[in-house]
Length: 78
Image 1 (cartoon, rainbow, N blue to C red):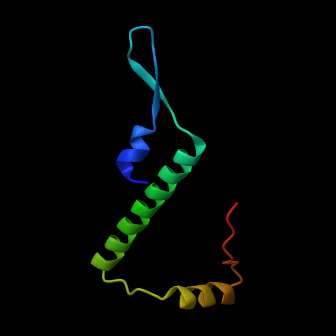
Image 2 (cartoon, rainbow, N blue to C red):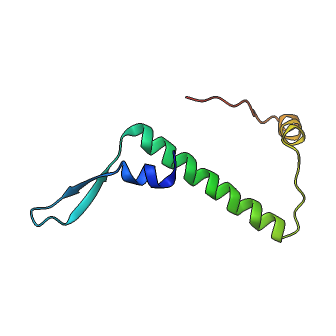
């Protein structure tokens, strides 16, 4: 779903004068917005690290390193 479609799904609560006071979203839309925001945050972090000259590490290598430190890297979706 595009950002425009996500935003068009928003419903607004208004006061007696018609002023927007709150937003209501279907929970599935909320989850999609959260995913989008997390992806944007990740992309910004990647840009920052590249600008700082940080080296990219393949995911499999990163998982192996984390596991060797006793960190659980199994992905579970609730």
